[in-house]
Amino acid sequence: MMRVVNTRQRILDTALESFGTTGVDGTSLDALARTLGLRKQSILYYFQSKNGLFQAVVDQAATEFIAELDDVVGADDVWDQVEGTVRVVFRLALQRPALLGLLREASRPGSMVAVQLTSRLSNHIEAAQHSLELALKEGRVAGDNARLLLFSLYSTIMGVATEVEVLRAMGIEPSLRSLAERRSELLRFLYAALSPQPACL
Amino acid sequence: MMRVVNTRQRILDTALESFGTTGVDGTSLDALARTLGLRKQSILYYFQSKNGLFQAVVDQAATEFIAELDDVVGADDVWDQVEGTVRVVFRLALQRPALLGLLREASRPGSMVAVQLTSRLSNHIEAAQHSLELALKEGRVAGDNARLLLFSLYSTIMGVATEVEVLRAMGIEPSLRSLAERRSELLRFLYAALSPQPACL
DNA sequence: CGGGATTTCTACCAATTGGTAGAGAGAACT
DNA sequence: AGTTCTCTCTACCAATTGGTAGAAATCCCG
Image (cartoon, rainbow over all chains, first blue to last red; front, side, top):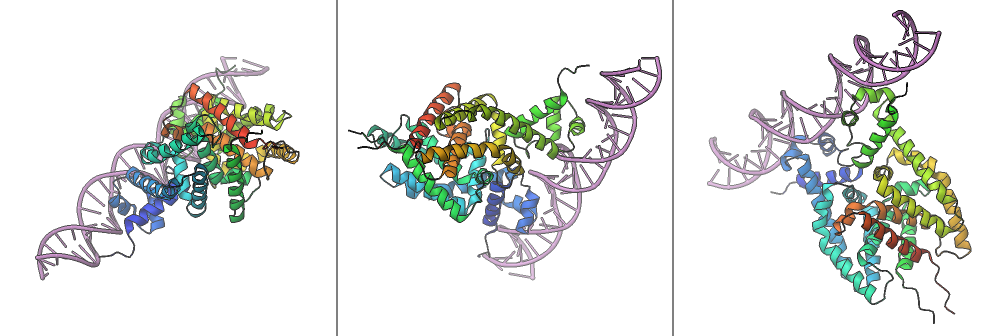
């Protein structure tokens, strides 16, 4: 039999939305159920506990995030990979901000999300690091330490894409146009940071 | 009589610690009072409500953060300002991580902290932007848009300094040594990003 | 010492939290 | 038809939430 909509999936989606914006602590099962038009007991039917739901949400988010990044990894050139990542992250910032919000929750010190995400993303991290290492060795990008460089790249991209409130504090109202501007400025910034200084003969 | 320690200040400090790590939602007045060796009613004696306490904590954090940055603004050279900011932020990351954690809470979309911080920091933001604009015009740094460039700088610095869990995910255990490495790599990264390409004749 | 202010407490409170037990509705199979 | 399985519900629960009222303690000043 096919249900009108898969309830379990609806719960996951709504939970992701709420966890990613209001935060996990700020989300109650009752409130979640209310926006779903259910009782919380129905949620607990599909997931053993709030924490179980949280794990499932993170898992789904990781899957989606990884799927988005999979296209990017394929690129040969490091710069293409960076550009692709920026494209993916900014699309997510626009279309699924809560997903990025959830990833941000992961960076909270001591959060369990981090541990969960780590294992899921380790492959991508290693691949990216490897790619960067090679580029470093061949002098195609500037830098010393591939891992720390990757970390800097990640921080910059994620920050520019998600720190909306800081942006607002700087007098830039988030909009589609400003998002595009931000992206192109970010790309310029990253390109400058990665370009090896041209050897002036 | 002089109290051993100002209770109100103790509450503010402990609250900052908890808000900055566990988050506001994750902090209960009871738990807070327990770690202080008090009853929550004593907290409510000094602050009208949990939200009032939160506001006060943010206010104090802003004051401290601004005080730290005040030295930096004095520098004439843009690069000195950037370097100084990195130094300040990394010192805070080491000595007062909860303070940076609280600032992170501000970037949550819809948070009221942001509004509060905005007004307090607007002077610094404008000064920095102005300084960057001048440097851009004179060709001392590379870039198009001073505001967006400032935003990129902020995101990078803040991210590299605070995203400890991401770092752990990449196999780097946070330590004093790794923090120093991260800082020097960050400085190199930022320098590369800001340096105008030397005109190769 | 005594009186007033400051500070911390006990005693509650209504609302909300995550979670359990189990009834009831509905479809599905036999 | 009956039975079973899937799903959502009502009815609770103990613990915790932020917050109020006001009693006690402690302090300061004369």
